[in-house]
Length: 344
Image 1 (cartoon, helix red, strand yellow):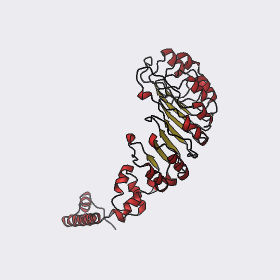
Image 2 (cartoon, one colour; image 1 turned 90 degrees about the horizontal axis):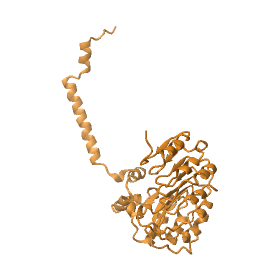
Image 3 (spheres, rainbow, N blue to C red; image 1 turned 120 degrees about the vertical axis):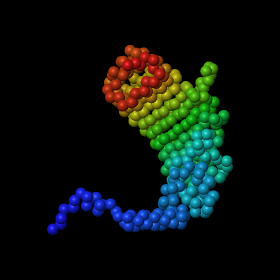
Image 4 (cartoon, rainbow, N blue to C red; image 1 turned 180 degrees about the horizontal axis):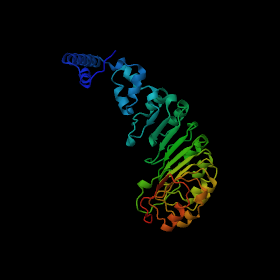
């Protein structure tokens, strides 16, 4: 029979004796020494390529362009197409700078190829050879940014015959002085798969002086060639007004989000028609628009599916806010910053 152990005996049996402590310390020191020795003998090049690629995936493309000079294996790893799925080529936004266009065109096939998913191009790279090579080599390209914001003139696209045709997300940064039709008429037929459209205007670059505003891109033609649009973001596009908003209500039955932030000519006159025809719209972003009380109150908000609304920096009255906000059934997001009449 086993005799019960008293409390004092239990404590002494759990506490190692002096000799036991010494053995434990010696074993621990030995383990640390072995571990230290193993680390000192570690060589990164002994890692399997799969693990090495995972490590390199945390580096920026600028870093990859530097470490590729270490050795041939690192160069092979750094240039693996799996590390070049999302490429940014706008230096002012942290992207790479391209000094030789011809070499860049050669790299599209060997460095990017079918692995490329998204790319940002500055105006100097939005040329026929680059666009056609992307169309031929990068068949899985889904997101593209075309930045014309600093351009002074449009390149000649007369000979353009090919353009990426599987895009789901297209962003065009506009210029006040460049009319985009020379390019757009060549690519309209390639936009049917686009679901997210961003047109970035020049509101942030505008001055207080009165300047003539030009309609530099044809929204009506874009809309007619993009029947699958779910998200439209017209950020700071100075020429956009209520007539352009009404255009969206036709042939855009899948529309879920409309963002008109800093479109200062939008008064809300077309919101009623837009929400009646595009019943899937859940998000309306109207930051700094020139919204009018009568137009906002004319909308049948209770019959819409709007759950997210941004009316920051608008001048809607207290009565209008009570009327509108009280009829939206289920809010998930509401932004009303800098609204003088929004109170407790």
